[in-house]
Image (cartoon, rainbow, N blue to C red; front, side, top):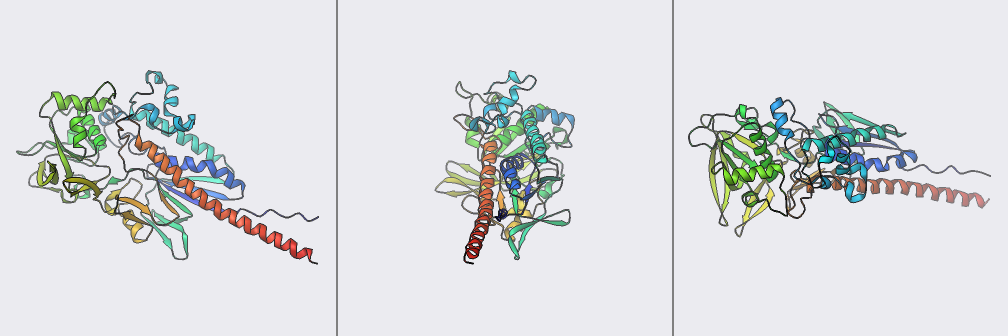
Length: 460
C-alpha cells in the first residue's frame, strides 16, 4: 500500500515587519502570537522584525519617561496620571484575559491595592505593565520552534513594492533594504512633525514632554508668556508639567477643545483626574492665568519674529464666525500630537486634515516616509476624514489619531489604548485570513492533484 505524503501548507515562509515598538507594536505582536505556532506547525518558517530606534518595550512615547531630560522633568512627568480609569486601559476585562487586565496586574504590585478600579493611576505604572507584557511575549515567541523574533533599533526611511512582486514590501533602514511579506505600520498616534525650523530655538518645546521652565525666554512687551496649542489632554499635561516644575505665569491656549476646557467641572457623577482638577482650580481661582481661544494655529506659518518673540498666525472662532489673528508669544509648547485644522461651513467648524504626509512623524519614521508611501502607491490620504489608508494588501496601519486616554463623558473609558489594540486585532485578523486562504488553496489544489493522480492509476 502506497502512503501519500500530505501536501505542505502553501506558505513556506513568512517575513513580517512591525514598525513601532510602543503600545501599537506590542498589540500587533500579541495578536500575531495567537497564530504563530499553528502556522509553524504547518511547516512555515516565520521571521518577525520590529523596528524602533528605542527598542521594544511596549511603552511608546506617552508611557515612557522623557528621554535625556533632567531628573526634575522626569519627576514632573511621573506625576501625570491616566485620564482613564484603571479598569478601562486594555481589553483584558472585556475578553476575560487576565494577561491584559491592567487593574488585575496593578493589584499584584507593591502598594497596588491602594488603587481602586476607578482610580486614575500614575501613567508610568501603565508603562511598567506594558513593558512586562512585552518581555513575556518576547520570551514566549522565542521558545516557539520555527519562529524567530528580531528587534532592530533603527528608523525606517522608505517603503516600496516592486513590479515583479506586488505582494511584498521593501523597507529601507540604515542604508540597506529588507523585503517582507507583510508590514504593520504600528506607530500609534501620528504626531505632527511641525515647525522643524524651530527645533532647538530658545522658548520652543516640540512636545509637552520637552517642556522646561528653565529654558523659557523672558516675555517681551505685548507677548503671551506661554502659548500652548493642541488637543485637550495634551494641553492639560503641559500645564501639569509646568506647574510641577514651578511655573506660575500665564497660559494662552489655542484649541478646538475650548468648550471642554472652559466648561469642564468636577461633579459627583464624574471624578476628574488630578491633572484636570488642578487645571479647573487654576482656571476658576487664579483669574487671568489661563486664556482659552477657540480655534487653530496655522503651524506652517509660525516664524520667529523680531527679538525673541514668535509670530503665531491662528484662526479663532467666535459667535459662529471666524477671525484671522496673529499672536505673539515668547514661548511655545506644541501639544498637537495630531495636527488638524478647520474648514468652515454655515458657521460650524469641521475637522479636516491640515498636515501633509511630510509633516506626520513618529520616532520610528523619517519625516518623508509618508510622502514615499503615497508616491509609491502604498497608501493615500483619505480626504473624507484625513486618515492615512493603505492601498497595498501587504501594508496595514495600527493605532489611533485620538489623544492618549481621551475622556468619554459617560464612563471615562480609554478610547485610545483600546482603539490601538482593536485596530491591531483587525489588521492581524485580515492578514490571517489572507494568508490562510492562500495556504489552504494550495493544500486544496495539492489534494486535487493527488486525487486526480490516483484516478489515473486506477485506469491501468
